[in-house]
Image: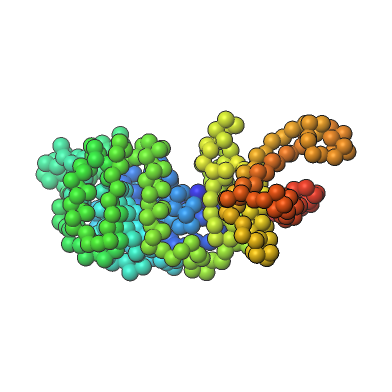
Length: 409
C-alpha cells in the first residue's frame, strides 16, 4: 500500500485550518485523488484508510481531510452545511494543485459521495468519480436527526446525538440540504462514474444508487457490495472496495507511468505499509506489488515472501536466459516453465554440494530448479539446457558470494 503518509493543514472555506493526511505511493505518482468522508465521520475511518492505502499501492496518491469542525480540523460544525462542505472540497483541491498536483479522481463515502458528485463538474482536472453508499440527494441525511427537525425549525437549532456524539444542527443546515439538487449536477458533470452500494444498506437505501446511476451519463459502472454495511466496518469489505476503486480508476489514467514531475525509481524501493506485521510495498521501476510473510509466521500473506521473490528471480532469469540462447542459436524451443523450490538444509545432506561445502557444517540454502519445455526436448538438448541455465546471472549470483553494503540515512 502506501510507502508513507504525512500530515498537512490547509485553510477551509471559513479560514479555519483543516487537518489532512497525504498517502504517497512507494515511487512514481500516476495521479492524485481526493477523498471525502461520510457525514460526521473523519478522514481516519477504516474505509478512508483502506481505500487511500490501496489507491497508493496502485500509484495513486491520496489526500483525505476532515471537514470543518470534524475530526482534527478547526472550526465549528454548527456553522457548516452541505454548501460549505463543497467549498472545503474546492479548497482542498486548490491546495493540492498548488502544492502537488490537481486531483484527477474524487472518492466520496456516504454524504461525502453526494459532495463529490455535486462538485465534480466544477473541477476541470477531475476525470473519474467514485461513490460509496452515497445518497442521491444531500437532504437524505436529515433522517439521521428527523426527530429533532420540528425543534430545529421552531428554535433555530437543536443538539442531537449522531454516532454516539453530540452535534448542534442549525436551521440553515437543514435548509441548505433541502435546497440542494444533485440530479442535474450528476447528469452534466461529464466524468467517469463508479457507484458502489450495498443492497441491504440500512442507512442509505439501494434506491439511491439506482437514482444516481440513472441520472449519470456514460461511462458509468455499478458494483454491488453484497453483505457490506454502510460504514464498511468489515476489514474484508473495506479492502474489497479499495481494490475495486483502484482497479477501476486505473482505466482513466495513463498506463502505469510517471505522472507530473516524478520519475521511475532506478533501484528497487521497499517501504512498510503499516498494514499487518510484515507487509511492505515494493516498487521496481514502474512496477508495484506487495511482499509479506505467510500467516503461519505472523504475516498476512498478502504477497510473496522474501524467499519467494528470490526464487522468482532465479526462475525468471533462467527462462529468459534459455530464450535468449534459443533465439541466438535459432533453436525451436517450446515455451519454458521453471519451478523453483527453496529449503534450508543441513550442509551434510546437500546432494551436489562439494565435500568442502558439506564439511562446513550448519545449514545452507538449497534451490531446486525444475525446467519444463512445451513439447519436450531431446536428450542432447537437455544437457545443453542444464548448461545454459547454469549461466543465468541470478544463478551465478546465488552460487558465488556477493557483497552487501548497508547505509543508514
